[in-house]
Length: 144
Image (cartoon, rainbow, N blue to C red; front, side):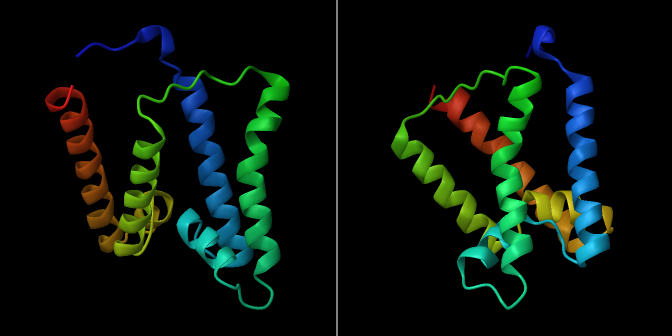
């Protein structure tokens, strides 16, 4: 395995991590809510309770508008997708099913749950990381 040092961006990764952590901490401090994206979006789509639509919509809108704001200051990084539309749909459905099965997603368990020292979130994070490693290994080395 080799590392593509020309695309190694520790400063950008640190800044992104700090912003994610800050957003999660602010949502918890000011709204008493965990910043689990699947739960926020799911609650927005499944008839939110009174008083919950505005903050959920603002959070999702922020996720959508952030790349546009970033692009004002710098070029967006190039993205590459190595599969077709069917593969993307299948992957999205599997991730959604896994988030539902695990009672949360990577942001809810990996960012918020681990920072609260939740044993359930540790188990979930280890599970989805292992599944991700296995998927990449199978897709790249066994299927070609």
